[in-house]
Image (cartoon, rainbow, N blue to C red; front, side):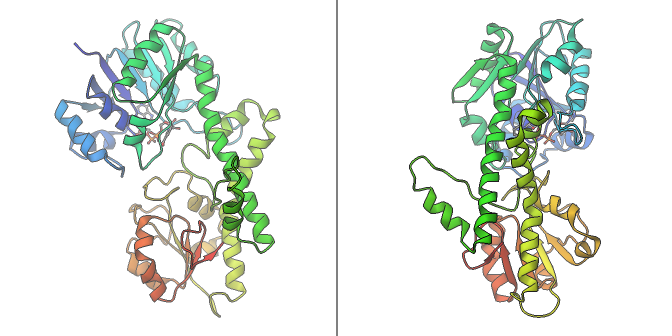
Length: 403
Ligand SMILES: NC(=O)c1ccc[n+]([C@@H]2O[C@H](COP(=O)([O-])OP(=O)(O)OC[C@H]3O[C@@H](n4cnc5c(N)ncnc54)[C@H](O)[C@@H]3O)[C@@H](O)[C@H]2O)c1
């Protein structure tokens, strides 16, 4: 009989992984959140993601089940949150440690525990191994690389890394992932797997910070940053990224801090990149205000509408999003005088958030686009017709003013 896998944490990473594994394994998904489990049991999944509905229905038909309780299983896959501690910048291991203690209470000897959550280098040695001194389990780290919005495709087509203590464990877990992953799977030790994942996202963060710094320089010089970057990228070994209103999400804006938390002395570049990216939401807001004060959108007081509360286009994930970073920095007057709208966020996350797009447009004089969802691309002409002044933070719209 196929081995039984208990996937712990049924969010953006855990749920799609559980669904794909259920094609070849018996799978039970466990989440602490009762609502998440209730929804999954009642035939609904909890977030907006391409192809997820089809894969979910196929998986239900194959017999996947969902529970709040941890199960006795052969393999555990753990995809719980791993935030950072604001003061020390170290990984906050509380969800991981809770999950490990619960697994320990039910797992048989020799169970394999695969941690997919992103963790700082050394986390398994510091926080996980000591919990199992009196129980024989096999630990493994298989960090996840998926891009939200395209998770099913990425799970199938991204290469991945497995860190384990023993070759036999690496081999078994490699075979498990090969049941749905078509790309190369690299086996290494646990700490190398931990740090290699974190440096991938740090690399992205540093490169985005460079683009954002260029945006500040070019703006000061009255130059079009995007055109400058487009030309520089003709160099055969240069690939400057595009700037934007900041960096959000649960990965790129978080993982670099894990390196800072482990070695603050040797990470000035990483810290500076984080600070540059964190400065962008208020930078673009300030540029927009300057333009309004200079009369670019006509005379008199202007009501601003901020479009896009998620951290990137066409997903419903608002974690660490630049718009929410900005919201925290606005003064009470600015907050009360600004309207917010996101077509993919129906729950209320800020004051003055409107859920009807027409009402939103009717309430504002100026539109500041933080996230270029497909929705606003389709509605752009409607906004122009209403003579609303548009400020764009991503150069998605050629005709809009850039900030
Ligand atoms: N979202 C991504 O795109 C992405 C990509 C790569 C890596 N990761 C990493 O994967 C991990 C999970 O991220 P996510 O985006 O899936 O998070 P998520 O918040 O979407 O899901 C985590 C789930 O774990 C549940 N949970 C928390 N503590 C639990 C516990 N003790 N036992 C059982 N369930 C518990 C929560 O209720 C939640 O449903 C994080 O370490 C993240 O950095 C995420």
